[in-house]
Amino acid sequence: FFAACAAAWWFSFQHPDAFRLSLKDTMTYNALGLLSWIALVNAARTVWGNYTLWIMACRFLAVVLAIAVLEISLFSDPGSMNPLAFSEITNVLTVFVSLLLGFYLSSSIKRWTTCIDGFLSLFEVIRALQMQLHALGVARDSIAKVVRYGLLSAWLCARLQHIEGLDKPKRKAALFNTWQELRHSADPYLRLTPEECEKLEHIDDPCPILWLWVALFLGRLAADGDIPPMASPTYGRMVMLANDAQVALKEVRMCGEVKIPYLYTHTLSAVVHLNNILCAISMGLTLGACIGELLTIIDPRLTLYGEKSYPTSTASQVGQILMVQALKCFCAPLLYQACLEICFCLYSAFGGETDEATVPADRMVREWTKELDGLIDLAAKPPHWSAPVFKSAISHVPDIQRTKAQMMQSTKKGIRA
Image (cartoon, rainbow, N blue to C red; front, side):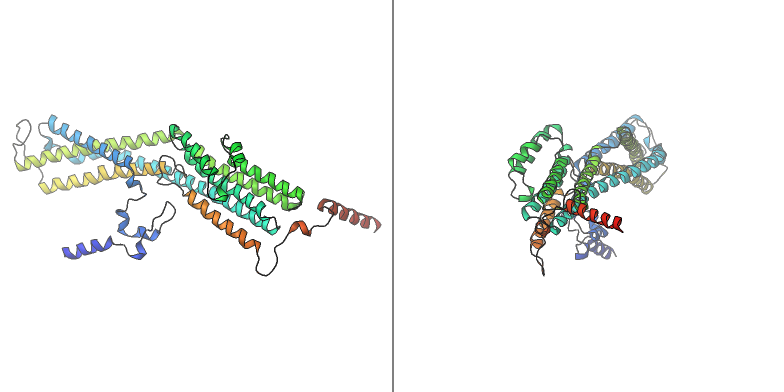
């Protein structure tokens, strides 16, 4: 029987293909791997690998041991105390902590997903603008410039959000390294010219400026006749796409800058820590009482002040009480502390000092770069027709003048009729 149980336990922690996590980053993993018990022992990129959690666990254990030693030292017969009475200390507060943590965790996840939605919508804007420029037959270099500015805005948005989450002494060096990386990047879509860097590096938020340059460049293309003129619906649609990109950037930045009021977060943190301290006191009193009871079970004279004590429970009952209280007063506070750290990790999607819930923005932007660069090559050579060119298709009369002439002719015809 025991061999069968051991075999079942061993097989439950194996790695069949269906249960492989294949964890690469925060957003790339196999969800079916979480269905196996192997998720209990895999601490990579989880809150259980966070050193601050285990520091708090060590402090919790220190309080438990200190309270147990004090109880054994101060009371002549600690075994006569009822260990279960101490658990009443935290019953009411535990329910309150659970409700507060549940609300805060759902709010943090909503903020994280909102930030990711804004970041992904930025890529959709870049792809839609690239498609319209290809449909109008704009030159490859002009399309590449628009795509480059769009991808740079997404990359810079994620990087600057990450830098803002760092400590102040680290920000200056991180900003310097960021601009150096943009100057010497091997990727042509993630590189800035020295003139562009000089204009952008002294601006607090350069991402909207990049989309302002996109809008200005579209105006230049319209003035040169590469795209429809400014009064046309097509040009208005392109400018609206640039405006949508700025709205997405604002949404991402708002999630990083506009935080939940400190009054709420401080109260939540204080309540969780207070509950954990009370649980540690309860666990320490229980541990001291159980140790005193076990000593009197061994020998009634094993008390600190020589007073005889007569046990009222057996050793198995004392062990059962100690086990139940350990699960209730140690594991539950540890889970509350873990949930609190998860909430703070989800606070910023692009990380900072903690990277457990950081979005892999660099990988995503580089994948977008490959995709958009491939679309430029495919659009240059359609399968069964030649690529369109708007500039060579227009007549010598500008669109606005031609439209006015048509309206005048229709008006004259109406008057004659």
